[in-house]
Image (cartoon, rainbow, N blue to C red):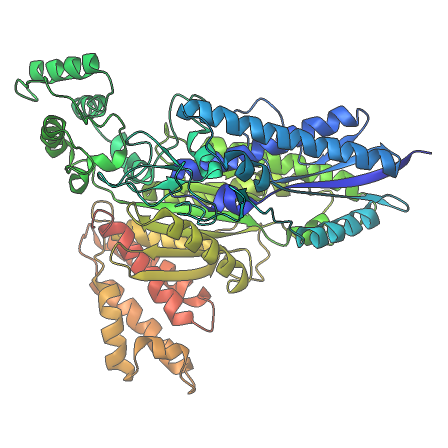
Length: 630
């Protein structure tokens, strides 16, 4: 007798596919590999269960840069024995695809598999699946399925490697995962690092000097090669997107010459040098010696500090690049970018139907929500792109998102995504959910220097996204700046003006207030100097005799101190106006800026109210004046 079952199939480990990365390309490749494996699992499910139904996620196959979660939920009919057999077949299909991806990466790297490569690849995937028969209703079966899935996730089998009769891996570890032996390396100068005897040396510029990669890390490094005409943007490119978009035709031509100087073909190098001579951009150059010519362009090479013999060993190439860089440097100078990470709040409760009018139609709700999240994910992924000079998405699965954003577009991008999330998700499920409940997301927004180690940036972004949920009470954002000096400023706010405000989930009053402050402090567009922020701490100390941050920790009644500080802020704002137009306009500007500052002051979360408020103002100051500093 055939019964109806729910099956939950998960693919991991997510940490090594997405979180472990030294380059943006590694991160993006890991996300794409995971999405591709989930797609294979879903396709295999449909083959094994022709009458089955995928409940989550719902997606279309026509998107090249598909972003899928690392799991799917399906509904199938059959016996428990047949379901186990077919689930194992799905698992084998995913494992075979992963091994094919690894073999293709070796071909792109033009190397053969060293000893241990196959072992590392086979041991990497962490696949789990559970099933639950639908005996009463969908909601009950789904809740039990999630419970079983959570229990199984805590069990991980570990493979024991063996080399030449000895147990375990002994040797230099991968520079990215820090766990597996490095099987591929690049020399640091003339010295070969202490890797395994059979480790394979890769060509210059494919790896960083002294870098070593495991089998999995090599697969991520070469996965995208040949798939797209353009590579995933580096942090330096994201930082420079706005600047590049403002170049005039002459400057764009110089930039193209600059990029063409990074070539692995002597004929192209000769042509670009001739073009530079004809344009009076360079004198005649003898190209008899082009050995050690760097053929790989990266946007960080547009910054003078990176034009050195370590990155550009060929003196003639270095000389030409210096000549062109001096012409571009006044226009290409932004060195900071934003990494944005957000995911849906209380998704477990939403999927369990706790915010719905009833659980009787939970299956239909899942299908509707899955479709809405997929549409939003596709929209968000397409919204960020090079053509708009606003950033690039790493993955966008609907309720979770990771992407790079140019800081000049940061406020517009986040507001737009918040509104799109409400329009495409909340509006789609309006017939299911309770009227006063809205599906929201919390975000970690990290602003970092392009040279900050990317592994640290990603780790910090995940940390602050969790802070937004925990300390901000969800439906919140945590915005953090890591300066190149190491100084960190961090502020947490609700997106909206009040936790209890009866507004749509797309409300962005606090975010809009911060955006308005940045605009008014801008040297070109604004009317105010930043001195009111700089003077606030010292003025407050004179007013109260208390260090600024002590207001958060002092045991005495601080209500009068807070009122005094609010009055002092208004006075300092009035004094900070440095671009005047007419009496009426000036007064409007003062009032509008004061309202924005007061909005942040009123809604800064306790117990660290003052710290969040002051750091928000300091971040605004930083975004308007210091994005080009080292």
